[in-house]
Image (cartoon, rainbow, N blue to C red; front, side, top):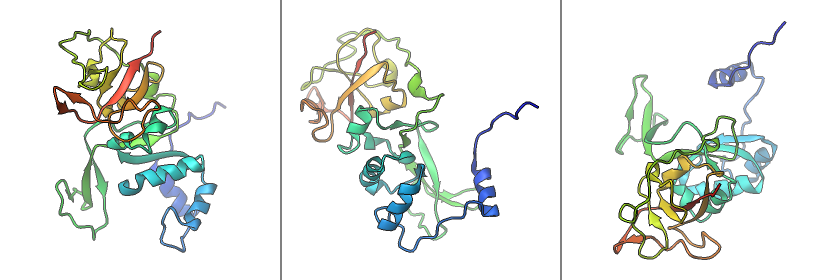
Length: 243
């Protein structure tokens, strides 16, 4: 008989496993701090880490995952790509942005005791309390067969000096929208960090960032980028790979 087609593994499967106690949860003796010896021992036994780490400890959490050479899918703020502790991993293609989240805010369910005193908080139609968090992304080092990293970004815009001014302090042009990366410019370009949602390492090289310290080997970048004396927002410096 032919085999049944394979299907995805979802939260229904997780619920079933927990109900049948085939995968009992490990009860912690300590406070659950990921840096504690108890949690590190559990980390060593894991194959894949999937979680929403505290954003304030994102650097430490990623450093620990990389130290123990773990595969992971974790949630973080998109601006973390320019952290000096994170950017080298992005540049070297050891970490990239995952699937399913590419723009907008995301809702996160919180306990009933959580105060809803910030903008974007609320209670949904099922009575669950939630907060909305801006600019979140999946960070991962797991390559999927359908990943956008395997698709080339379609380029249509042509370069003109007037349309793409050069920075005051870098020999690079400003590209304020990822969709407008010029198809015929071979030099260095500054693009928004959301470029990573479309990034294909076979199409572009990431050279540096305009934020942070020591984010490129030559010390060229990392000092802020300026146009007509005004500093731009966070930018990644990229260059098209010549075919």
